[in-house]
Image (tube, each protein chain N blue to C red):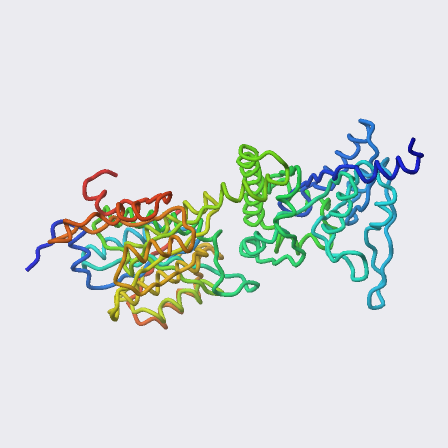
Length: 385
Length: 152
C-alpha cells in the first residue's frame, strides 16, 4: 500500500497539464484585469482554490478593489544594476500549487536573474505543473500584429510574445469596449493618473487608433475561433489541434501572374483581398521574356513592385520564354494553392490552336485553383455595371 | 491605320498625357476625380490615381502597410470603376513617405506628369495641408489644378 508521500508524489506527477485562458483586449484600460479578477472570484465561489500569482493594478483603485478577497502571493525582489525590481515569485506559485492561478500581463519581460526572460515562459512552467492559469494580454503584444499595430498607432510595443502562445491557449476571451467608452474611462481618470491623460489622448488613445485596434482584437479572436473549429473537425488529440491540422487546413498561398501593365494592378488588388480573407501569403510572379523593357513598361514594373512591397507580397521575376512551365515550377516550389490571373489576351493565328493558359495550368497543377479576374473595362463596355 | 473599337480602347491607345490625382486614406474628393476624368477624356490622357501613405517613423519606409491598404485599395477600385465608365485609361500608383508631401515628392521625382489635380480639403490634418499645396505649386514642373473645398 503506498504511503501518503508516495500518493502526493504520484498525484503531482500524474496531474494533467493546466489549462490556459487568456483575456485579450485592444488597449490598456479596457478592463482585462478586472475581468480576470471577476472570473477568479467566480471560480473561488464555485469552490476552487484560486490564487493571484501576479497582479498589476497600475495604481487603478477599481482594479485593486476587484482583487479584494482573493489570496495574493507576494512578489520577489530582484536587484538589477542597483535598482530593486519586483517580479512574480514563480517558485512560490509552484510550491503553493493552487488549482487556478491568476497571472496578469502575459507579455511582460522579466528582470534579468529570474528563471525565465518572459512571463509567458513562467506561465508555461505553471501549466506544466498542472495549475490552470488565467492571464491577460493586449493585442498589440502579439508578434505578428506588432508591425500592423505600430502602423496604425505609431507606437511600437517592445514587449511581444510569439503568436503560438495565444494559439496554444485553451480559451481566448476578448474584453470589448467601444473606443468612445474607453476614452470616457480615460478622461475620468480610470486608466491613467491625471498627469498622463492629456498626453495619452494626444498619442495612443486617439479614436482612429482605438477603432483600428478594436477591429484587430475582434478579428484575432474570430480567426482563433475559426482555426480551432477547422482543427477540431479533423483532429482528435489536443496536440494535433493547432500544430498540424489547422496549419494544413488554412495554409493557403496565392500566386498572382503579373505583367508590367496598368491592368495587372487590379488583379493584384483582388488577390490581396482574397489573401487577407484567407490569411494567406501572396506571391506575385512575372515571367519575363528575354529582352529589354521600354520606358512605359519600366514604369509599370516599378509601380507594381511598389504595390507589392506595400501589400507585403513577394515579387518574383523569372526570366524565361516558356511561360506555362515556369509558372508551374514556381507554383510547385512555393506550394501555392491558388493562381490568380487576368483575362488572357485573345489568341491570334496559330496560337488559337493551343490549349488556353488556364487549362494548361490546371493540367500541370492538379489541386491548385485557377481564378481569372474579370476585366473591368470589358464589363463597363457591355454596360453591366 | 487601326481604328479604336470602343471608348476604353480609344483611351488606351491614344493616351497622350498623364494626369496625377493624389489621395490619402482620409478619402478622395469626388469633385477632384470628376475634374480629372473630364480633363482626361477631353485630352485623351491617362489618369494616375496615387495613393499616398504616411509611414510612422517607428517603421522602415519600405514596410508593408496592410491597414492603410485596406482603405486605399478599395478607393483605387472605385476610381477604376468610374474611369472605366468614363472611358478613361487608368494607371494607378502607391507611394510611401514620412509625410504625405514626402510621399508625393517621391512619386513626382520618379515620373513626369502633365497635370496634377487635387482638392483643397479645408480641414487641417486631413490629407495635404495648405503649405503642401503651396509647395506643389512652386516646386512641381506640372500644371497644378487645385479645387476649392466643397461648400457647406
